[in-house]
Length: 470
Ligand code: URP
Ligand code: ZN
Ligand code: ZN
Image 1 (cartoon, rainbow, N blue to C red):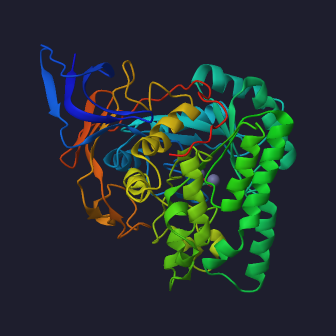
Image 2 (tube, helix red, strand yellow; image 1 turned 60 degrees about the horizontal axis):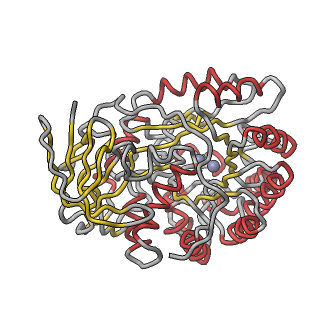
């Protein structure tokens, strides 16, 4: 039996902030109270005076070891979860992405093997890239035997994993019978493909054409379509990586109409904008992700939507590629630049620094957006996403006295470029605990590859988003 007593902490959850001690026995929080005094053999006492004590971060959208064409994204489950832990994230949700006609279950078992070296706990969403009668049985097995309660469809990438409208409707019809969530990558793949063709035929090959071939309307139109499909099928949906203010207006309108719609955005859409595509040489390729970075006014609207609760989750879509050998595949053709950027290490520090300290929302709401709502939305709450008796002991001692800058040198991830290079941050984790074990302290990772558990998830734990102002 191992035991930890966190003393003198200022605990911050999505709901409240208070001074108390936390007693952890093995993997669980067993008591929260004032001045806990226990005589337990080998009890380790941690003094949390001067730190905020937060529930571990939950990042509901990452891609470790993502295969795309002939390459694999820079971070695998080992390097990616080291980076996550170092940033205060103790749970990630990654994806199984079967190509068309592949068995979902076989791909899931393979993916679990790849993920088994994760250092933090992890769940998996299942992507559906092909719809046919026979798939239904596999989906039910995913739900019943594997605790998978969220399924992803891509409206983009039509020539690989994308799904046409008719199939999206069939998928939603089916999922609505089980009340499980359909996560949607909203971009109109056909329009994007026609821009690709046009630009390449005109000899326009630079990274900026990635952004120009995916104008805001390609996302907004797809969001509108997803909402209309959700209304038609009564299927709860989750719009991933929303990048435009207009998309959010559509989401908010639908929420007011009672549509079961949730949304996420990512730090890069909140903090960066399309000016990054004007960089010289090939450096703009670092910022090639889908959807692309937008004009500055969108950032303001996204922050506002986070504050109001129209967007419930901040994820990272962590999927970095190195400039050399990887992004460089598209040096003569922007359509060949692998899509994706990192962020799993930086998410909490960035959202705290630019959200809470810029007075955009409260400390409690920061916890809500980065931990509690992701856990509730994806069926992990109250095991994850909070500090409560019987919850998993995933706890972060948050050093709000820290002053530093993001640098690629100290990230513990496999990508040597960083889109947030030089960004000031005003907090960082001091200690990170995962299921009762100290996973990070004194700048050192203390758990081994394989410590992370696969998470069986229940259904969405929250009703239609309630708008709040904090
Ligand atoms: O550019 C991105 N977002 N890459 C990762 C795959 C996806 O679309 O989520
Ligand atoms: Zn996507
Ligand atoms: Zn993604």
